[in-house]
Image 1: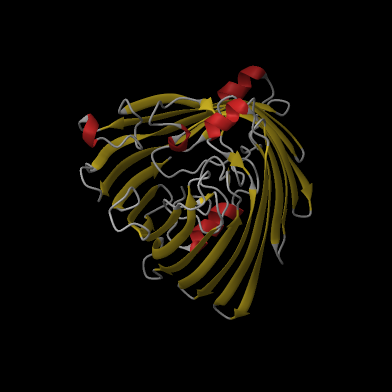
Image 2 (image 1 turned 120 degrees about the vertical axis):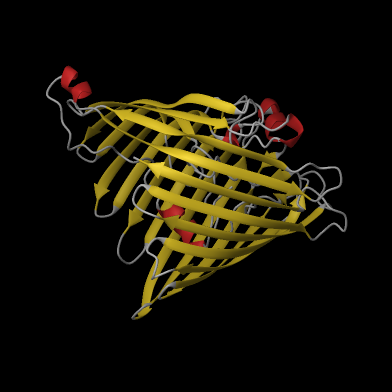
Length: 418
């Protein structure tokens, strides 16, 4: 899942994921272990959220929840390059609806969660940064994807090295994760990224220059799949006040499942995805279009990662690999955004997405065709206060009867950061 007001929001999130994590401010140095804690810093946020989903299928209840929560982060100063950090996440339902009317996406199945989501030791030296423990990670196929009350975090060891000249190298080993996409219907704790898999190795390189940005990533999900991903983004200034951005992406995936992980994943992983995008910004208006095509054989499906995913046509609910199962899949999006020059920080947008393919990896005759409309608004009231909301309409074009893809949903959040 990915929050998107316009294609520009998608690009901003994707390009912001070039480095695996944000390194703490190294300017606060300590001369002793005790001074590390004396010079500790704190930050966090308080968030109010409301979400309602109205299924159209007969007999289905409207699901909603209203919650309050947020996070509190503590981080020590650096002593000989070493620092410690931890972040506490929490979210509690305010309305506490009945089970049959409850949406667990905001607070988990128990209508609340309290979790030490980050707890790590960090080492920095010149351009090198190493981090071990529970941490926030942002890479193409594993990311924080902060779309509900709190982001995803991972149990991992990650190394990041700034080579200079715009080049950055990241490698790491990930084992478990938590967050709304990690199993809130079951629990709100850290779970295996894939059951019966020993972990995931990743290696990525990024170049960010004035002329273009490009990245290449490899993920080896043990006993599940080998995944390669690459993209390139090229911005152009056409004239004063008019800019164009072009992009291309590709992902090659091959299966490595054994008996246990095949049962957990549900099908073999395999296929190739190609994507193109274009975005034109004219003063305060932004117009965008994107297209992704997946080549997938019968009995195989395409892997989308842990979080929002890197594909150009990923929007609020649907993603490019949603129907890349048992047959080829195509998706495209059209988007329009507007930044109010008279109200600093206020923007609105609309995105239309169409997704076609298959929904059953073992039966290539089972077709899927769904359209989704996203209407969104974001308002940075100040550096501390932020409001966002999205209204989604989903329509199953393949079936004349209402299905799980026929619904509308509304979500709004108010966030105070400190």
